[in-house]
Length: 182
View 1 (tube, rainbow, N blue to C red):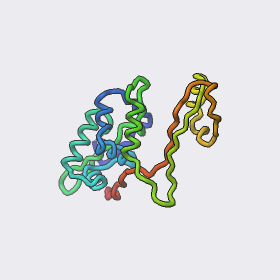
View 2: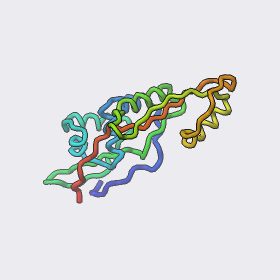
View 3: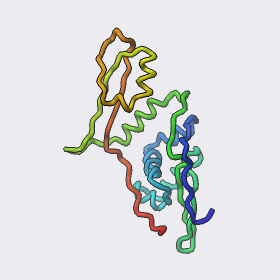
View 4: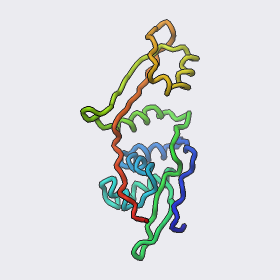
């Protein structure tokens, strides 16, 4: 394997298996994935960042590896031993279009990491209902980023109601300690 860390794959991994959703559904593993978005890390670094024990973190890394979400990214020699670096298998995850629990999974994941805004900090959650025809709903989905600032009239004669949840929040993602790999 060597001392050089390999970079994550650039593509998004499409989540579709029950094992993947179960792995990401645990709060410690969800936080671990968010920590590993920063860079590959050792068990010691993950233990420090997540405030847990090596045994617990080792177990959760194994579950993520078995689900195909985390991989061994490299090794280095330290004081007569070998230290392993773990990384995400891809830069991001995307839900399979046929994933039944996708929306609930994403909402629960966001709620699990959401921290209250501090006084004076931006943090705002908005729920707004729009009445859209099917073709309007498809167009809206394609331009969500632009739509954030564009108000639309609430007119039930235009079609069905759609909910849109947008949230800006402080995320509960610990920072890794500095990497002493030099």
